[in-house]
Amino acid sequence: MSDLVAPPPDRAGLYVLGLLRGQERREFEADLAVDPVLAMEVAAWEVRLLPLSLAIAPVEPSEAVWLEIQRILAPRESAGSVPVPASLRRRPSWRESFWDNVAVWRGIGGIAIAAALAIALLRPQPVPAPGLVAVLSSKAGPVFTVALRSDGGMNIAPVGSIKPPPGKVWQLWAVAGGEKPVPVGFVSAKPSILPAHQIPADLRKPNILMAVTVEPPGGSPTGQPDTPIVFAGPILPINGGA
Amino acid sequence: MFDGTGFPLLSDSAAGMTADDGLAALLRRCAERDPLALRALYDAMAPTMLGIALRLLRNRPHAEETLQDAFLQIWRNADRFDTQRGSPKAWMIGILRYRALDRLETEKRHTGTDDLPDVAAELPVDIEDSRALSGCINELPENWRRSVMLSYVEGYSHSEIADLTKTPLGTIKSWIVRSLDALKKCLER
Image (cartoon, rainbow over all chains, first blue to last red):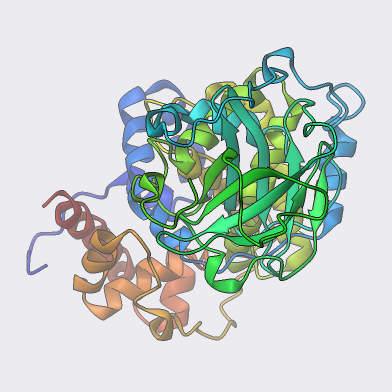
C-alpha cells in the first residue's frame, strides 16, 4: 500500500468493478471477445469480488418478472409446458432400505441435484427464500425438490411420477444431527406448497437433513418415524459459496 | 435408522455436491433447451440477483426489468458457460451486473446530486465464506475501500465518486487502481 509508483491499470479489474464506461467499455468488450487470456482475467475478478455481491440482502422479485420471462419465451420455448425429460422419469427402487448404506448417499451427485432442481416449481408460486433447497434422493436418483421459503413454508415438487405405496403416505421430517426428527408435513405425487412455519426456524438452515418415510395415513402414530428413510437430502445453501 | 445417533451425511453435508455443481448442471440443461431448468435457476438465484440490481439501480421497476433481461440472456447463452472457467454464480451475476451497467450508462442515473451512500456503515459487509476477501478489503485504507464499494456495489463511475466524495478525479482513479493491485496481491498470499 505504500508503493510510490502506481501499478498499471488492471483493465479486467476495472471492467468487473463497473468502471469502464462508454467507448472504453466497448473497446474492452471487443478485446474480450477475442482474447481468452483477458476473459480468464475477467472471470478471476468476477470470482474474487463475488462475495461482495452475495453479501447484499436478497429481494424477492414480483411474480410479474417470471411471467414476463415465460411470455417472451413462449410459445417457442414455453417454460414450464415441456414434459419431464425421459432421463428424469426413472422410478427409484424405493422398496430398498438403504439408510444404513451411507455410501449410497455419498454417491448421489450434483447432476442428480440439478436434474431434480430442474423440475421444481413450474407455476408462479411464492418465491423461495434466498437459495435454501433440498433435493430428496433415493438410490436411483432425485425424487423431490424442496425449496424453503423465508416464512418457513416449502414449495415441493416431485421428479417423475412415483407414488407412495397403496394405503400409505409419505411423511416429511427435518433432522438435526443427534436430535429427534421433527415432522414437518407430508409430500405427495403432486407438487405441493406447505404453509408457513412448517419448519421451525432453527431447522431452516443448511445441513439439516430432510427425509421421507412411508407411514400410515395421518402420519406416524408415535410422532417419530417408525420405518426406514426412503428419500433424503440435506438442505443446501445456494449462496453459501462454492 | 432414526436413532438420533450418527447422521454421517450431516457431517459430509453435501455428499460431494455443492450448490455450484447444481447450478452448473442446470445451466447445461438450459443449454439443452430444458425450460424447467431455467425456472429452477430462477428460483435459486433471482432474489439474490434482484438485491444486487436494486443496489446498482435504486429503482425497482428498472431492477426487475434488468433481472428479466439477465435471465433471458442466461437462457440464450447458457451454452457459453464454461465450467472450467469458473463459478456459475459469478457468471450469472456478471450477466446481471453488465445489463445493469448498460442501464446506468443509458440513463445517466447518477447526476452528482446524490447523497453519498453510507457505505462505511456497511463495512465490513457480511461476507460469509469469504474471510479472505473481507480481510483484504479491510486492509485497504478507508478511502480506497469506500471507492471500491461505491463502484462495485453502488454502481458509481469514477467521476461520480469524485463528485460524491469531493476528491479529485485523478486521485479516485489512482485509489481504485491501487486497490485492485492490493486486493489481487492480498488474495494471492
